[in-house]
Image (cartoon, rainbow, N blue to C red; front, side, top):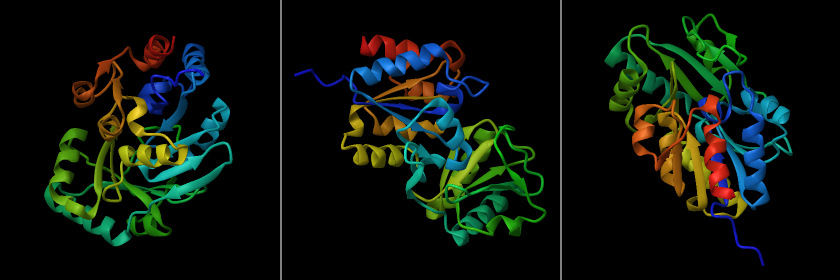
Length: 268
């Protein structure tokens, strides 16, 4: 009987980690993931993007497994093209959290990701999308953002940098929401207690596996909970300093096949 793989799950973030700048996966990374699969490991995509913003990308990559999306708020079966689980952010909690943040730092620009496989990203006045290739719909008034249930809120500040805004938000929102810094210009609020770590744990449960058997790859502070849930955390060379400090290993950048470098070593 063959031995089980050293890691039963390969959990990869997308932007800044597995994907190159042009939203493609290199041939070397594809081959390394195939090598891990041949050894018996399951690939688990773990991304801050909501399902509608990643669904066609996953299909184009030929990915048919589970995907943790929306910072852990959604568990999506890419092969069946169906939502397995979703957690929504209460509107009153979101309103209260934004109010506390604005009382602390002044007005912020706001966007939301709606719930569901067809949910839209709505952008309030003044908000600029940090990832211009993602589909989004602009609104004229903030009140229009709450037209349907949402999974998370995105906030930007006209003067504060991301780390300062995230720290200020965490200091005041309490248990109204979980505050996440997921990329340049991307500070987010999702349901309290929901993050990538919780998403990985839920996905592992569905797979009948222990998240401690996972090797995880990421580049931003939103990957910290995923590293905590998994057995081994690998930060990209382009990763945020907080994630590099928490990682078990730092590999090459996403443009230099950093994920593949580690997988080739682990699964050969």
